[in-house]
Length: 596
Image (tube, rainbow, N blue to C red; front, side, top):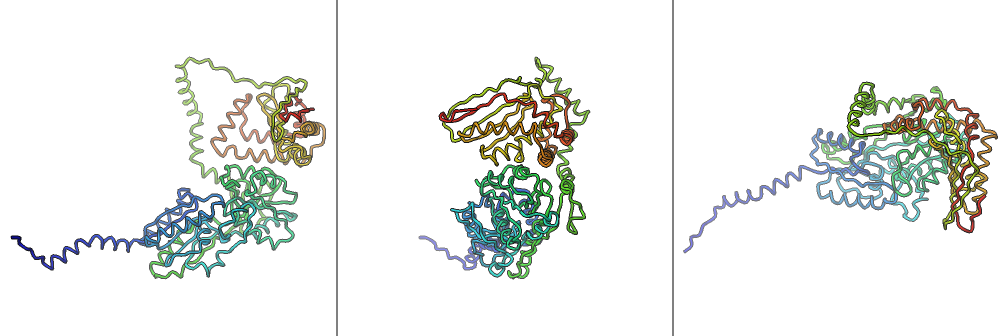
């Protein structure tokens, strides 16, 4: 017979409490630890984004706000992906609403614009912008006309009624002040080109400028837009008419949605070195821009946003969120002011003039210090001896460097090969007849820029642009062989005419007039391109490596720039008169194989 055990009611209650205690504690912790979601347009590990996130987290912790911080990224690039950004924003908000979401911080133009275009603000959640602008456009863009999309600009400040419970930091781009700045320094200006790219920031800035331009019927606005393709953008910039100026906006992403190379903007500007360049956004100041009225660099507003979230916890009021707009200033590059002969007294009152080269030296001082240590006389000798000692154990027979060569002058050899191509290829090789002397290098550089090495050259302006004989036509010089190559893409039927035109431009430079303007444009373009040689260790290494290979006394970049400044018109003619046609090669269709 089994014995029945009665359960004491008090012990039963205690047991239930023990069993439910972990769930109670977890529920209590969940209620005490809410969530703040940070959505970054780009990689949050980039310096600007990571600096903001670190400082923001420190301020939240220091203020005692009981929130966990989560970071997500949209990995934005080209505007074609905008529908995906909106969908991602919606999914992220839905996911984190289940984690007691208290605030959302959107970093970058794309994240902020996608959030606004979504039109859904969760109940009881504060939303903040950072690294975004006061102006914008509504998304998504029409997928069938992205290259020509010209949306209307919107003002986020003016949308305050529809954007309840939002705040943060917004940059303000003042187009009017930049136009007035350009006109004060260049009163005769008739055309202003705006440079923008295939990003949300570029398209929204262009929309703002187009809206502002309605107040300037006497000014022609030229759009240099990477959405039209890099080649078209470069051509538009290169062919800007006289009395033009440039406002830089954004230049990061091309029409294919891929990032530009770092030097792409510099290359674009060097297409037309006669045009003064300013900046609306700060882009290019310190490199190619004279200056502009730009947003002042700030810490991203982490203190502003953290403070508003703290106030939300203290008062439980979500109506106090509001926008702060960036302060702006007139900022100029001292080197560019000197280059363009702009006096400081001509600048607006309160302008800030920076020595950008000194700033770069300060920024990269640890690299430069390593370079100096590595190249000190005593250290260099130690490295040299250590290397020679190691090499001494190896059987070697080092050869001297090959001296400069030259193909002897001869009657031109013409060769035609046939292949079914869309366009013909014409290659012409010229020779000096004797090895190039190292002291001719500066004259050769300027001669190439005048003849076919730049967008202000005779081949580009006359054979390509004026006569329409070539899709492209350029010259280059090989110092080691004393030879110049001219490469061009032509219509099959135009090959003979193109060759004659190429030879005529060479003859004209040898004996005809060379204007002071074209000579100085080419010289300025070369000097600008050489200005950044010492900015990187790679640039320095490449420069001196080529100097050693070329033979003769090793020139420093300063020596080379000074030599280029001293080149005269007659020096250029002397080099060009030495060149004679040696080989002309044409690749064309069989039916068009006639060659001059």
